[in-house]
Length: 209
Ligand code: URA
Image (cartoon, rainbow, N blue to C red; front, side, top):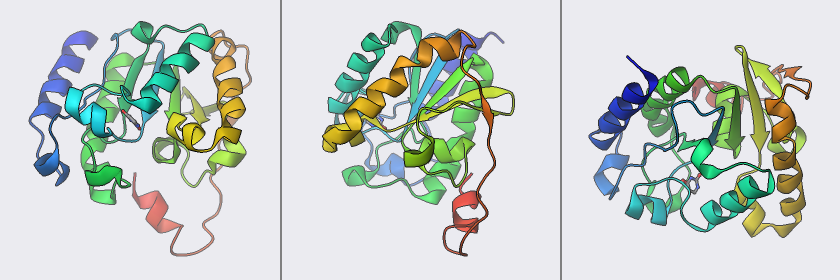
């Protein structure tokens, strides 16, 4: 089946999904959007209020900032695929829970498989930890990692930069390297997960994905 059809099918499944309790309070699931041949895929955390209302990713304040960042990096929103690690809004925008992350993971995996993006940009720690378990965003943001043959660039979530203006120049600088990453001009590191320090943040973190 061609990638566009696969994405359509995944979106339909997400529309009807009842795999986790988030389906009970959602207005609209947000499967993600963008062309099936996108070279870059952005993965955020979860839909917020406006995304839940519209059924589209990153359309609220963080989305407006994401649009600015894309433009500043010479990228068009229409050319990239944008989605979230969790496709339905957690009530009150709380953090996604392990069962929600687990229930949603196959949708994201299938989207990646269909699109085969050259570069995946993770926005925030939840999507980062899917590919780079145990990583700290403050240490690794803006670096390029090769994970299972794919380039992963962890970045701060745009909402974090809106809440903490000192992060803004860092996020802008991270977006500015994307052209070079796409052109293969930035060296990719191998990711070595830190040894877990305690029972609490070790196995718990790793078992999410
Ligand atoms: N924050 C996210 O992580 N995703 C969205 O779609 C909107 C805000």
